[in-house]
Picture 1: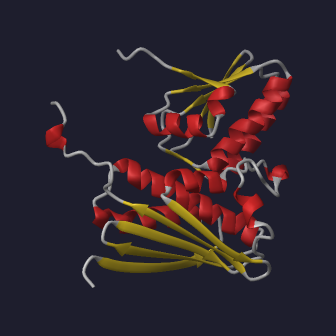
Picture 2: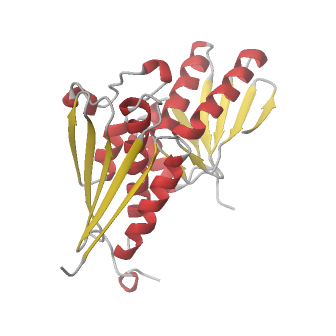
Amino acid sequence: MKGTNEMTIIFDSRSENEGFARVSVAAFMTQLNPTLEEVADVKTAVSEAVTNCIIHGYENEIHNIEIHCMVRDRLFIVEVKDTGKGIEDIEAARRPLFTTKPDLERAGMGFAFMEAFMDQVIVESKPKEGTLVRMKKTIGKGRELWTTQSL
Amino acid sequence: MRYQLQENCLTIFLPKEIDHHNAEDMRETADSIIKNQHVKYIIFDFDKTDFMDSSGIGVIMGRYRTIHYLGGEIWAVHTNERMKKILTMSGMTNILQIYEEDTL
């Protein structure tokens, strides 16, 4: 199928890899010719999702985090998956300022950030089995041709 | 992490990227100075920063709580458009002031 491309990366749930993860996803999405803002949005969302896997999914134990990216024409889909402890109450977890770890000074804004920066965020999770966060964003929506801007 | 202390004002020069990985280091360094040096004002200098996620918001909120309790204030300087957006979106602009300089 034309306009289709996919990639998967699997890496250890070490906080050092947060930067690697978001930069890898950003590099993969450049084929969609995104604006800097769109790249920054996706990087932030990926960073939030990966941080969640490390802190909440695996509670700082070292296991695998899998990121799967898909391009469907102008739609960019990124999935971040862990096989950690899962989320008991997804609705509560998505609520802004909700955090199960206030002692770690978590702001409770992870999902709020993902939702703010992506078009759609879907969370699938089962306690003791893990969590999958699927985020979608259409790239090139708000772009104006530079020739239409005053010089 | 680089910082500067002038009387009771602590300036923290934030790194290029602020995420969960380096938030811990920022938190520890800032807290030890605040505790030992009677800091009342904190300036977060975003000059070098082009990426921040909610971990950074956690660090700012935590420092604000400590400083606010002592009657102090926090400021943000050299924020680019992206950082302004993140700070506004997360409600941080209610607890800190973004210092806008006149462009020379």
